[in-house]
Image (cartoon, rainbow, N blue to C red; front, side, top):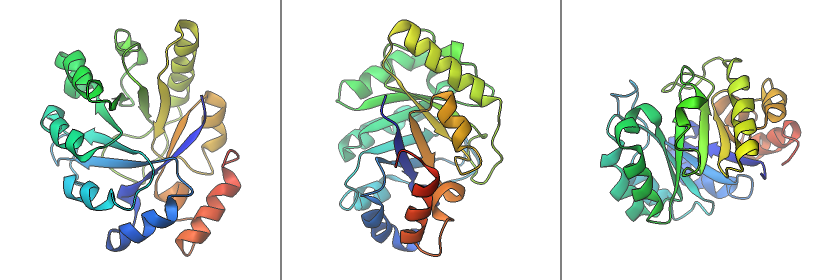
Length: 222
């Protein structure tokens, strides 16, 4: 698998997101859009209108991470917006996982499953061969700036082993506290997609150009 960077739009400056994305285009491999409904998690963040307006300036693929109670209500509009992939929390689609995943993939959009820290990788046993990515939350969902949960490294390693042993094709993504202090451990564990937020990207410079250059210094594959 080719290692990739995914910049979290939620952590950008909302006053000038369009300008920021134009600068980030050459650096990132995709964009990570967090949707929070204020119910599944207590915060409310990005929305359909933001994707619609930013789609014009974002030249890289868009992944939408649905931290919402009823993700099936979002699928049709996200399909119409032309997003590239949608990731669902397992506990929000558990009783209809195959129907939801098939609806997404039937529209040529990639489908992913997000595992919260307390959820085990074995819970995806019957989904591994139909999903395109597994996102490992290395913090509890819903809040930026949390401490990295080191126990998640073994989950990442297990997901990599399961993939290799069974010739599955899913990518392994990590979400939460990806920065200079955790990157070496994550690379060693076998992560494919690294979501960068405030601590690992936006806060690393007085301006965005400086943040990009400083991020490249600690991420060896960029």
